[in-house]
Amino acid sequence: MPRSLRGRMLLAFTAVGLAAVVAAGAALFIVLRDLHREATFATLRSMGTAVVAQSAVRLNRTNAAEALTTIRDELADPELAVLFVAANGTVVTIDGAVRPDESLPSQRDADRGDAASGLVRFDDGREWATVAVAIDRAAALRSRALVLAKPDRAAADAARDLARTLPVVLLAVLLVGAPLAWLLARSTTGPLRRLTAATASIPSGAATPDLPAEGPAEVRELTEHFRLMAGELAEARRAEDEMLANLRHDLRTPLTVIGGFAEALADGTADGPAATHAATAIRDETARLERLVDELGAIESLRAGGRGLHPERIQPRPLLDDAAARFAPRAQSAAVDVAVEVDPGAPAILADRLALERIVSNLLENALRALTARAEPEPGSVRGRVVLAARPVDLAAGPGLAISVADDGPGLPPGAQDRVFERSWRGDPARSGPGTGLGLAIVRELAAAHGGTAVAENLAPHGARISVLLPTVPPGP
Image (cartoon, rainbow, N blue to C red; front, top):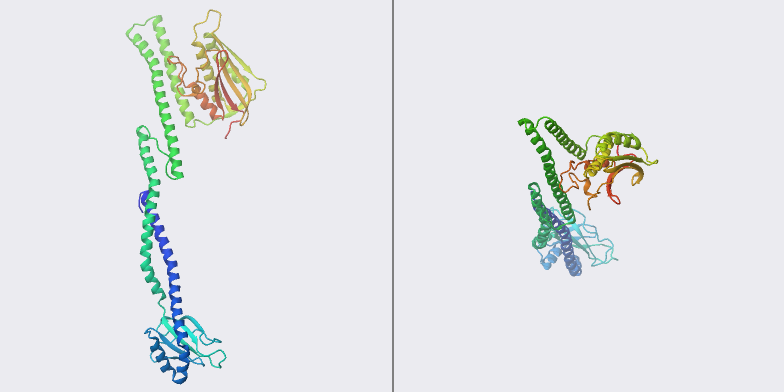
């Protein structure tokens, strides 16, 4: 069996062509054999009817053997066997001639010149084409017949005819079928070869060539799926490169701070209050690095399926009150007011408590970070306001709960409503803020794990709101 698809297709076409030639040859052989046999019967009938009148006279004047010899000599066919069937059914042959081993074609109730034909096996073991021609009229009391027979060579004659015609048929099949098979194989293997060459460029990261949609429908569909896969892979690599660049930036700042203060402590430059400040800075930057590593691990765990959810019935009011209480000290130090607003119709939902607490915490972190970017407020005033809210919503899967965190900060940059949930994306062009750019990505992944989604929107006249829409009952087990 050839290893290549083209070789297998050519072999298949060759096999089909040969099978078609064999089938056609078998059918043609049967037709030709019957035609040759009928031609032999027609010749014998013609010869018999031509001599039957003279045969009756000769058979009446002399003995049957001499009459049969005379008839055979007149017909001048060395292969011809001439027999006579007497009125009593006795078969008379020329001395030394073959005799039938089976019954001859019946001439009962036949008129003079009527002929009956058939294949009869003779004592030489061969089948003979035999024709019996009635000698007497139907009114006669006796029923006699002249029998002419020749060896049946119809099969041999048909085989000779096929031997002359089949090579021509086979040549025609090859001349027509071979180019068609080659074109069909090329139309299939050509796109597959280009597809194979294109796949070889993927591991190296080289640009994937633009493949034309050619060949059969299945190959075109495969090509289209490959193009989509290659595009998604290129986008994933681009996102990974961007994320690595962002991580390098995010890691460089705390490492620089830690290294600088550690060196100051080591060489004694920082002492007294400066040493305390250096130690505090090192602690804060170390905590920032830990948060970055934790968030990276959390989002990778979610991408890979993460730990299983452990749903329990959660009321929105206690959830938001607890979150506001946890962030109250930080919000007070940053001069930010935090309020909780829960719609009376907000339903309880089945959700993983740890996941839901992380969602709310990340949303609060994002809102506080947006507000603390503002300048220090005047004594006794506030930077801004954050509102934690819960309200009922109607989702495609049924009733649900919307948990949102809104702030009156600068809002999202134009076109950022979708990008805020991307890994390591931040609206800060200088990327100098304290965040890692992974918080909202984790929010979206946790929402998706519960069968929900996350949306971002700007508020008028300024500010932004991030909402998580969750069904009251998550899908799946």
